[in-house]
Image (tube, rainbow, N blue to C red):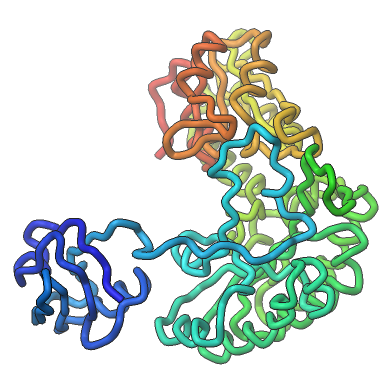
Amino acid sequence: MSHLIVSVDPGSPAARAGIREGDRLMRIGGANVVDFIDYQALSAQRRLTVRVRRGEAELDFPIRKDEYAPLGLNFATPMMSGTRLCCNKCLFCFVDQLPSNARDTMRVKDDDWRMSLMMGNYVTLTNVSDRELDRIIERRCSPLYISVHCTDPDLRTHVLGTPRARRLMGQLQRLSDGGIEFHCQCVLCPGINDGPALDRTIRELSALKGARSLALVPVGLTGHREGLTELRTYRPEEARAVVALSEQWRAKLLKERGTRFVFPSDEFYLQADWPIPPDEAYEDYEQIDDGVGLLRLLDAEYQAAWRELPEALRQPAPEGKKLAVACGKSAGDFIRALLQDYPVAGANISVHALENTFFGPTVTVSGLITGGDLTRQMAGVDCEAVLITTCMLRDDGVFLDDMTLEEAIRRLGKPIVPVGRRGEDLLNAILELSGSEIRIN
């Protein structure tokens, strides 16, 4: 096994040792390098020997450097290997529900535990061998993010559509015993893996030392499910049952483990018409990327930033600049109430909850709003600028329907301002658009 070195950072330990672009990395310290995980772990030492192949020869380069200092080698792909793909056939797979005009990159089903470590992606572990589990433990790859869905082996096999799914609890026990910590997720389907099955899942996961938290997320269903398993969204009373069960466990586990452990997503509270818990109930917001506590953190941060404003700026502004906030259906009422309760002088803000026609009306989160839906539904709104969450855009400024931010601005004929998800980001955007020179750090 070898890896082509595409460049060497000037002045780096590798460059000083004489390693060149075009060499192929063979081993570090006598150990084979499987991927970037191995590379990072093996190159962290102060003293090491790097073996490369140059042409037909294999050369050893002794290197001294500061511990954890980068070696300075760059490879063709960030992972130094291909992405590990999903081997499951989940009942609720979102990729299977994409519209026909969705871009091809959205159809890639990855299930790579290395991306779980590096980026917080959820993985099922169904494609992880015992040998790979040993490597996870040996390399101290922690924390991981695990899609559990349920712990009953027969039910998990049914939900994930593969017999490999039944190995989960043994895998988690092994990781836990090896000192690896992990956050868990359950995508819940009404009448399938909630109720008694969820009660068992919470009980068994909370007994594992390595399990740090469990997020509960309602199944996301698009309008493109022809030929797929018949599923439906949660009714309010069913969502309330999930939240009520989680509240029982949260109280119990807070006493026993010092953590509430179970965290329903914002969507569950909204579907249940249940008050979103206070700031302290989310502890360290460790599951925020799974939609757990996003609204409460926005609320807490916005309020804190708003209170730093001069009194003269903390006033309603019916004659201020007309600004519009565009978001998904689920967040509309919450954001509208927040901005009404904590107004900014010079800004007259309206909130517009958009219907998702690209994925279907049952998809209500802001991050899945497309440029087409945004521009069509905001076209007639009387405002000077539209604020959106950066979650609607890829890093390159492109919406999920491949419309660029620049094209959306041209179509709408007015500024569209992407806003970070922190409360002070929203407040500062409002202040800037309203003409104020004050900013909150």
